[in-house]
Length: 141
Image 1 (cartoon, rainbow, N blue to C red):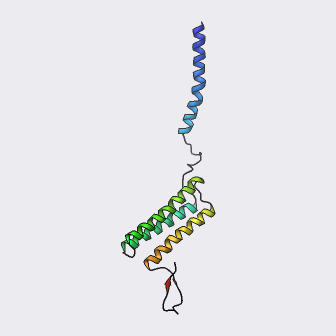
Image 2 (image 1 turned 45 degrees about the vertical axis):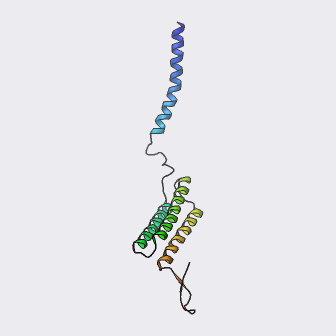
Image 3 (image 1 turned 180 degrees about the vertical axis):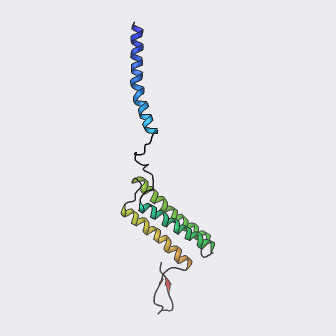
């Protein structure tokens, strides 16, 4: 009789421990249609626009290199700067549920514009300064 009571207690204890763990395991592996999205998803117009602009500048660097208007070393430096901006954007978006706050967005855009301006100056298509009174126009940057 005593062994039956011990067996019943052990069975009940095992059941009480296993049921909540099984539910937690199932909940962790099941995502329904109404569940929140993964916090590392890149969402929002700022993130999308910034990533597209980075890709555009990166393509411009590649085109300039293929046209031999910049050296391979300069292209590599510009690609690296663009990649750092992209990584920073993804890091910020990942830490803020897929969004980029306005302040950081403007900072990333400024940094990307600096890369783009450097590319334009290096290729000779940058904005020129001066009125030519001193003998010429000079690249802005």
